[in-house]
View 1 (spheres, one colour):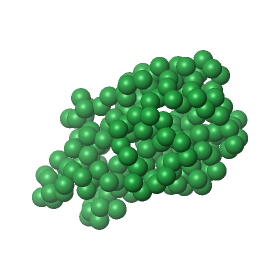
View 2 (cartoon, helix red, strand yellow):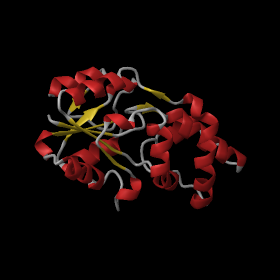
View 3 (tube, one colour):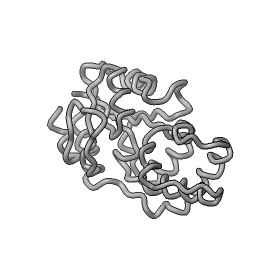
Length: 203
């Protein structure tokens, strides 16, 4: 493998609690109480799609409140251990590195840039750059185009079934970020990375 394209949430950054607790709070204020586990099942897909899957009314209204509310839970966000070193090692070895995320640009700046992760990547594809989000392959294909990458030497590293499906649709290897401590139940990755440094074994 010569090129590594990364999801963000649940892969580079542990952001689940920030998103899910803030959504739970927004819904509670509207008189809607949903279990954390139910909300967490939508983690990793675009926010609008998540609300639709949860069959919530007034999607636009909830979205408008949800984004600003995440600020209250920013202290729960952390870069997974070993990620920065692994990215530095991959880059030093000559790998092409890109991000492809469902996040909007302001979320990318808020989460990735503020964490000092953006400097490891030569390309970043965000929600505004593509017509169709995951599980469509659009984002991965655009990241590959920007990297000058081919499917046979590219891996997409993520953590959800949506990442797995997008990888399959783009005909690239899907690598599961197993360092997040989760176990896949609704998909089978092509390769699992127990630690971030394990990615170097694919070079």
